[in-house]
Length: 409
Image (tube, rainbow, N blue to C red; front, side):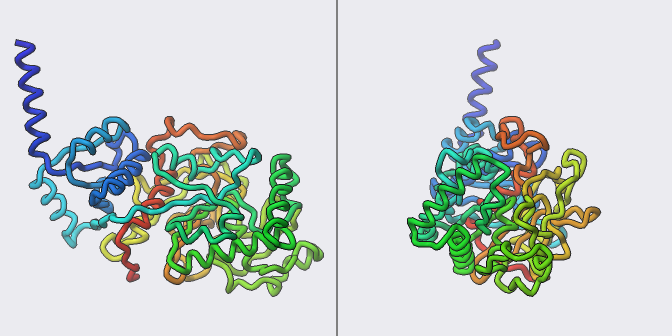
């Protein structure tokens, strides 16, 4: 009898698979591994499948046509999924289309070509770059490029470029606190000389301008930690060596041209012997384990891009520190959209805007699951498969795949 029941169950499961038309990847609290679900969406795009991103439906779920290969990948990757009928798909889409609910459907079609701006030598532990770490965990392919590749116009090969713990001011005084950074700076001096630059600051400024041009030309730029602050400091200084003047003169904002920056204005530069680049960064000193920042809720039917970038199973993200921990709200340009903030602390953590034909996102902090005192140790994402802080990174990774519509508000 037991064997007969087992056979009946197996036949039922096979018959259900035969009539199942779609696979739903829920992204609410029922999902066992949110991070790998993004990798599955990328995998399906590689297989030339159409993937629908259901904005605000069960935490921003994914929907695609059923196949045995897709179901097998869900099982291998440990991703929660539901096989559903055409009738159920139509019911979900009808629910989403209702003007009474804040939901929408975005079709993912293009496979984004991804690059991470990072040194490729023994002085940098790439696993401490949160984006490299989560791309590897989610099994999303990417290339590592650095100054020489960008100097030689490698950006043209990519849709999405990430910047992390980088000093675009190129000033050597900021590297004195860590021996490996001193060695890395010497390597940068060699690269600057090889490429014909007068010094490292000149090279970094040129790279910053090329990254800005990449974005303005239609690229997607995502920056975290010190890169999100130092690139604007370097662009505003525009080659003026402000660190050779008296400390008091650093407070004169007339020495900076804020029209060149991505996100910030009216900031002042800190002396180079400080670890903080400018007064943009106001987040250092809080206890990240006890404070949270919140995500804004946008209209999924009208403000599609910010809705896409804030998809999550919670709107509360535990704060985390970095060389640049949080952005001073008062120094953010008025046209920049704040996606996440700690209003009580007066800071923004997650911001976005358009530039020319492209888009950029700045996300403050170093590691969404990092803890003070742990140094540069890598996070084991097997312990954080549902990290809402890391989900924000992966929202940006899939952003170039979406059919884009500009926000109307």
